[in-house]
Amino acid sequence: MPSRPIIFSATKKGNLFYIDVEQNECTAYLSQSMQKPVDFAIWHQCLAHARTDTLQNMIRNKLVDGMDTYGEMALGGMCEDCIFGKHTSYAYNGTIVKERDILECIHINFWGLAQVQSAGDAHYFIAITDGFLLYQTVTFLASKSAEATLKVFKAYHKEVECQTRRKLKRIRLDMGRE
Image (cartoon, rainbow, N blue to C red; front, top):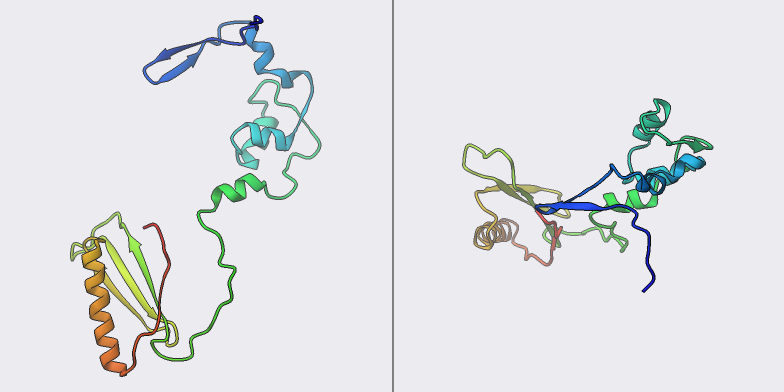
């Protein structure tokens, strides 16, 4: 097996590795950009997709030795990795069908965990909306257990079918990760 040069060494303390920066050999490898300027977008990627204004400040004020750029000090549009990194879900691309009657479809949305408990000891709420009327009922919950949410839904279901004399046809959930 051929011998390879040691770029740097590290010492493990607990679960962390501390790089020994006292060695002169690693300087050439860790600061290769000092030889020539680098595109602004490359700095953005190398520094964990830092904000544009943060990078501009670092360059203008020479806060980092060797951090030289060429061209415009801006990203050419939005960084694709930054856009996808901020997404938690994707847009609905299906067709949207408008409800034509009461109780044709109800939409159920859960919310919580609230950082501050309500006066009635609730940390969550469930919002049930009729898709045709856009009438919304909000019920506060102390827990988001299956029993508690099912109890709220059954009470709502019984009440609206009794009031409207119509049957509930569909239920749509937001499938949120609250």
